[in-house]
Length: 253
Image (cartoon, rainbow, N blue to C red; front, side, top):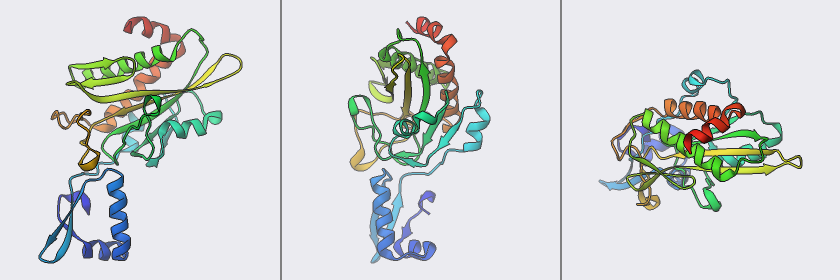
């Protein structure tokens, strides 16, 4: 109902959902906390709601059809953090496993900074990998992955993107994307790692707005999220593949 750019009254929600007006108000409040910008008006003594968000959900089939390496994909609509999800499952993961979400309730950036993750419209995903080469630093890995994202952006026509060392990606001097690498060290020197990627495609409204961030829609760049996320997963897998990592590292440095 909120996905139509039309005014919806409280009674419309109650009648359609079969819920009480109190429960409907609670749901609307919860959606607001998830980053959905819902405006409330009083029109002729009737309470109406209007949303600036359009809910264009990711298409699992489209994404899976574009993947080249048969990655296992965990689609979790709402999760605390895609990195956290894979960390909890780390002992049962295979190389290249991916978690994708529409909303993170506890999205993280580097040094545990908050990465606000509004419901639907952006990209949040993480991939699991093993690193056996002890000479590869996590900072270097963050740089390589960040430059890979910049390269993918250019293929989608997004130019003038720069890297803020080591893991933040900027467009017009504002943050458009970021990389987060979590590491679990093993006694034999091997490391299990989770590489998280976030991309801002849609605006952040209201109280959550931050002028330090930018999104592609503001730049009038409209990209199919399904194509972009599948392309990022494919190229991240290539970059991380053991036999090619050193070659890619030299290429980007």
